Image (tube, rainbow, N blue to C red; front, side, top):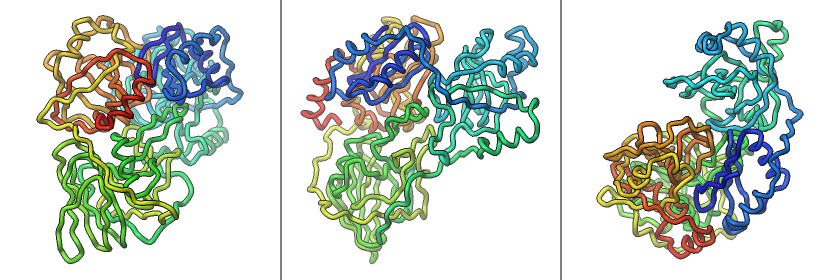
Amino acid sequence: MRFLPINLNALLVELDNLEQTLALLASLKNEPIAGVEELVPAARTILISWRPTACSRADLVREISQRDVSARAQRGGTLIEIPVHYNGEDLADVAQLLGITPEEVIRRHTGSEYTVAFTGFAPGFAYLSGGHPSFNVPRRSTPRTRIPAGAVGLAGTFSGVYPQASPGGWQIIGVTPTAMWDLARDVPALLQPGYRVRFVNIATISIAEEAVFTGARGQKQLDTLPPQGPTPDLGSAALEIQSPGLQTLFQDLGRSGQAGQGVSASGAMDQAALKAANRLVGNASNSACLETASGGLRLRSRGDTVVAVTGADAPLTVTSANGTHWQAERYQPVALADGDTLAIGQPQAGIRTYLAVRGGFAVPPVLGSCSTDTLAHVGPPPLAVGDVLPIRPVHHGAVVGLREEPPADLPTTQEVVTLDVVLGPRTDWFTAESIERLRSQLWQVTPQSNRVGLRLAGEVALERAVPDELPSEGTAWGAIQVPPSGQPVLFLADHPLTGGYPVIGCVATYHLNRAGQIPVNAWVRFNPIRDFEPSTAVARDTASPTEH
């Protein structure tokens, strides 16, 4: 097994094959290592994130190296049968690739029992191994821009079912009415790692059997996922959205621990700013705030409220009910009377601002978090004009904080933003010239950037030394992934859980908040650092708050 660097709190364990990967995953789940927070398995790798304060990288590597990966992982006892209409657009092409008839493709696909090896790509998307030995089908040369929910596909040696409509390059052989992802279930993802799966040809079952399938498991696919959790406590005050700006979302510290369902953490892009806003109004640091990009948010107070705005350097204007205007300050509590309006202007530095309200927003969590994941469509929808946001009652003992110092180095378009980078895990997939170019060349943030990632453009593209297709593997917040164009994408909070393009490096953990504040058209320079022990990173993180 190989240990490849990801970041100061994450590494990638590379093994020889899927069987070893599943064996190591089972070992790490049965005998957990203290401090390990997330395991993201893939075809031949496991991405491991840990708390540097709980264990060192050296201890983690030593412990994992002693695990037995020769034993075959035990399959779970749960069997899921999935009915399929075998009418996919690529059925005939797959048959031609394999040199058999479409009917034989169907017979082989339904004649095998599969195992959920790992999840990723989208919530509820499971990679199914163990199909007929002849199934080794390349992805489409040109991915489709939209594949419908329930599409059953083949890629390489895996089978899978798209849980929601999305782009994709798998060969589609059919469609199922069974919902792969449904928040109405106790466990939203139908397929969990280790489950056994069998596909059933709907054309061969009776009407009564089809009704059982579609009635028990064929819930309507949800494009907008509803909140989950108990009804929140409501106070008498609220905030009314008069203008949401470009995009305003609920965000907290994210929903870690959901990798088994194919869900990444998401969360605030500048977590230091979110925590500061909550401290200022006396909330717990992980309470939900409003995250808005590029200004334009305007809201009116219903009842007396106390808010705080942090993050980007944007002007704040308060207008009273009688029309009086005054400027409020960032990074200090702001008292709003009934009818007062607060407006956030265009940032002069940074791009994202955070608004917390004393008591906290009464928004129910989805999978343990109020964050909106814009890629996975998990969490509350973006806010719109007229939305009224109830506020929870203030808990006894909650103390409004004093003014905090705003960061002095927020990114702007007028100066180059330097980000420290840990090289790996796939630097060996690139030429030596490209690794040097990553450091020496300036990269501009393009308008196609969003919460999923910063799309960067450089004068000269990065070139690969290895032209092979990389099996899907876990990706981390801050990963610099390089698609075939050679123009890198810097993954941010809503990045996909797994990816199939090589990652040349990852922005150091202490610069992730800074990366989340980089505006469009800014210039970025990457500064590779020597990969050092996580304890060093923790000390730097504590000593240099301005680096957040």
